[in-house]
Length: 62
Image (cartoon, rainbow, N blue to C red; front, side, top):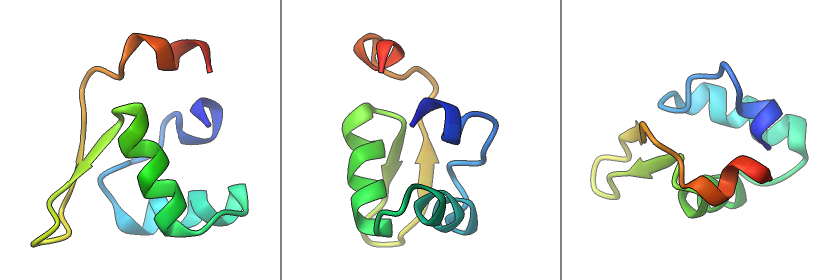
């Protein structure tokens, strides 16, 4: 996951759709995983994506 997302704009829906295609997962599953990793947050009302600056430490070993 880290390798595929590295250097990508995680605040851009088009980038996330491309990543989901590359990984062979749905966009919903990708969004949930990125949120669980602490890499993004999403405003549910506006659907705006916000990349988080500091991923949780335990994600660095994945």
